Image 1 (cartoon, one colour):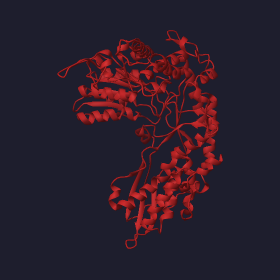
Image 2 (cartoon, rainbow over the protein chains, first blue to last red; image 1 turned 30 degrees about the vertical axis):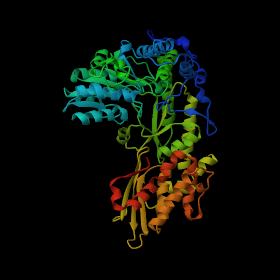
Image 3 (cartoon, rainbow over the protein chains, first blue to last red; image 1 turned 90 degrees about the horizontal axis):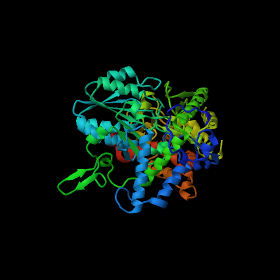
Image 4 (cartoon, helix red, strand yellow; image 1 turned 90 degrees about the vertical axis):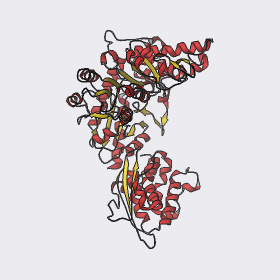
Length: 431
Length: 159
C-alpha cells in the first residue's frame, strides 16, 4: 500500500492487534506476505488479484485460526458441559463480540450469524417483512442494487401484493437523492440500500437516506447491504442511522459461508423466528415450543463453528491494520487506478460517482468483456467480467457486461500498472 | 502474445468476431430460435430456412451480441450448415461439441477432415470457461432442428 504513514484519528477503535502477524499497513510487502496465495503463478505469471469484490483472499492468520479450531478446541457449541464444547462455545461467542465491536453494535445480542449477506437479507424479508409488509405497501430499493438486495424483496412483494419501488441513479452511478426522497411515503415499510455498489463502487449516502426515511416514512425500517463497505472503511451502525446491516466474512478476508446480520435489539426481539431446529429453542414439546431469545432464535442448527471463529480472526486482522488506514490507502490506489484507466483511449469507466470505494468497472470499445477477461487472465490478472449480479445496473448503462477490477489491502500501484499493460495487449489484439 | 492464447484467438476467429457473416434477419424463416447465456449476457436469434422436400438447410443467419468467440462461432456455423441436411447438421453439432469439450489427449478432441473451418475452434478445449461461448449458437441450432417451430417459445441457454 502506498499511503503508508496515515495518521490515526482520535478515537479510532483498535483492538486485539497483538494477535496479528501484521500490525500496520506501513509496508506493502508485509501486508502481501500475510497472504500465501499471492505467491501463486497463473499461466506462469505472478498473480495480480483484482477480484476482491467477488471474494477476498485469506491471510495466514485466518487460515491458521480455522485450522487451530479443528486441532485444539473443536466440539459442538452451546450444547455440552464437557470442556471442549465450552471452549468452542467461548471462542464462537468471542467472535460475536468482535463483530459487534467492529461495527459499533450495542452489544452481542444484536449480531446474528448467518451464511452471508444474502441469507441476512432473506431473513429480514421473511421475518420482519412478512409481518410488517401488507398489500398496497411499498419496499424502496435503488437502481444500483446487487440481485441479493432485489430478489428477496421481489419475492416478499409478490407474496404480499406490495410494490417494489426503485430509486433511479444518474449517469455517474449515484442515487438521485431528490427522486429517492420523493419516493418515500407512509406506504413505505422497508428501505433497502447498498452501502457500496458492487458493480459501480458508488458509496451511498446512507445517513442522509436513513434520515429522509425517518422524516417521510416513519413506519419504515432501513436495511443496508454492507457487503462491499465493511472491508474498505470504518463502519459504525449507530452513526449510519439504519436498522439492519448485513455483511459477509469472505469479502473481508475471512472464510466463505459465514456472515452477520446486525439488527436493533428491539426489532430482533419482536421478529418471529425463521428456520426451526436446534439452538433456536428454549423448550420443545409436541404441543408447544418456546423460542430462544435473539440472536439464537435465528441460528437454528449447528453453525459454521470454525468459520465463525476464523471470521473473528479476520476482524482482528482488519483492526490490526486499522480501518482508517486501509481506507486511506485504498482511496489513494483507487485514485491512481482511475487516472491510469481514464488515460487509455477506447476505455469507458462505468461508475464515476464522486464518492467511490474499491471498484474500477469499465468497458473497452470494440472488445467484449469476456475476451478481455481471458487475455488479462493470461497475464496473471484476475478480474471479474460479466454483469456482477447487477443486471439492472448493466441495463442502466446500456452494456451487456463490464470488466471489473476491485481492490483489497494487498493491491499496489504495480498491480494497476500490470492491469494497464494487459489492457493494452487486449486492445492490440482486437483493433 | 503467448502461443496458448493464440490457440483460442486464431485469426479466422478474430476476423469472424469482428465481421460476422450472415448477421441478418431471414424474413419468413422456417425456424427462428432465440438463444441466451444468462451468465455473460450473450444473446441472439438463429434463423434457418429449410427446403420442405429434402429437409436441407438452404439459408442460415444469426443476429446477436456476444464475445468474439460466440460471435465467430455463430458466423462460421451459419456458413457451414448451409446445404446440409437436418441429420448432417445435428451430427456436426456432436462432432463440434466433442472437439471443444474433450481433454486434448483424447481422439475426439481432434478435428476431423469433414469439419473444415470449424476446426479453428479446437483451441477452445484448453479454455473451459469459454466452451459456453462457442456453443451458444450451436445449441440454438440443435434445439431448432430437434423441436421444430414450437421451440422458439423458450430461448435455449448454455447455462
